Length: 126
Image 1: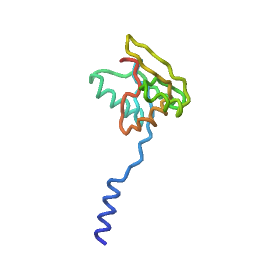
Image 2 (image 1 turned 45 degrees about the vertical axis):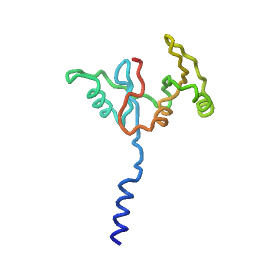
Image 3 (image 1 turned 90 degrees about the vertical axis):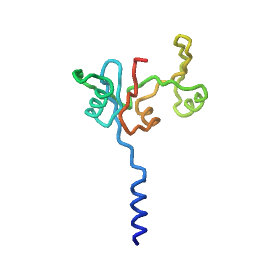
Image 4 (image 1 turned 30 degrees about the vertical axis):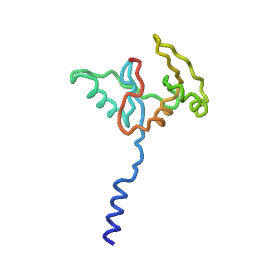
């Protein structure tokens, strides 16, 4: 019986835990952060990108089902994205760097990335 209890503890320890419910927050004019809540987004962004003295303007929560971002895809993924999303793919030439991009919702990006911790999901600075 003791062996079974130990095995069950191991299974429980290494079992996949459900992914946190992630949301998206616009933290400034350039960056959107994916995090579990507004405070986590603010704390993480401040730690990663700001000085201790820097203050935030009001952080806005995005509607992950409506708000969209441009997502760069590799040429070999074109058919998959057309099949999966049925979205128009745009050819974008940026100073000799050729990209194929598709506009997807934040929810689609979250489902694609399956994040478990905060990160910058979208930025206009590159």
